[in-house]
Length: 104
Length: 151
Image (cartoon, rainbow over all chains, first blue to last red; front, top):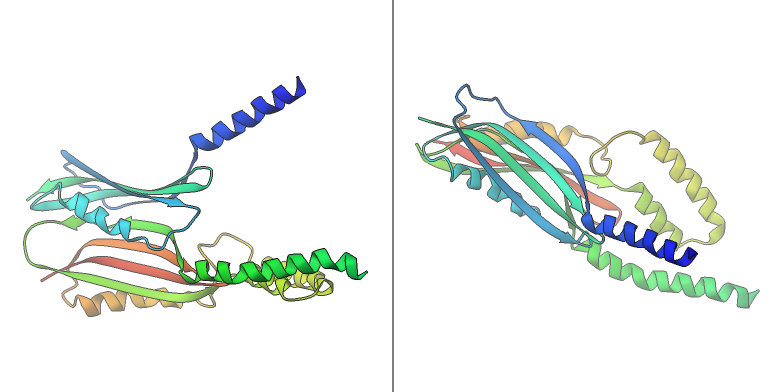
C-alpha cells in the first residue's frame, strides 16, 4: 500500500516535470502609436538540451520576421518578451515580439 | 589508514580525470541569453547599412573557482576555502545578471560605438542583447546591439 502511494506520488512529480515550468525572464516595450490597426507579431525559439547552447543567433531573425509583415511602414509599440520553459533535462528559450504597423 | 584513504583517493583521481572533459565542454563556451529588447523598426525607404556593436567584460565565478580549487587541495583546507567563499558571497549578495565583473563601465562605450558606425544617427531595427559566454570559472559578459543605419 505504502509502495503504491509512493509510486503514484513519484508519477505525479515526474508528470509535473514533463509538463514543464515557464520562467519569465525579461519584458520591454517601446512607444505605442496612436493608430493600432495592424498588429504584427513574431516568435523565435531554441530548444537546448542539457544546457549546451553555443550561440544565441536565433534572436537575430526576430526583427526580420516582424519587418516582413510590414512593408513600407513603421513598426512601433513593440513588446518584447523573453521566457524559458524548463523540462526534465532540457529547456526552450523563446522570444516573442508584438507591435503595430503604421503604413506611410 | 592507508586502506581507508584509498576510496577517497580513487574519487579524487576520478574527479581529476573528469575535469579535462568538463573543461573541454566548457571550453567550447556555452552561451546564455539574459535579455532581449527590440526598438522600433522602419521598413522600406532608403538604403540600410547593417550595424553590429559588441562590448564585453570578463566575469568571474568565485563559486566555480572554489569548487575547482577543492579538487586539487587536501581535505584540511576545504573548511578554510568554504569560509573564504562565504565571506566573498556576502559581499556579492543581491540580484545580478551573469557573473560579477570588476567594473560595468564597459557598457558605456555602446553609444559612442553606435555613432561611429552610423554617423547620421538615424538607426532602425535595433536589437539589444545581453548575453554571456560561460567557460570554466570565467565568463564573457556581453552586450550586443544589431540594427540598421539609414543612409
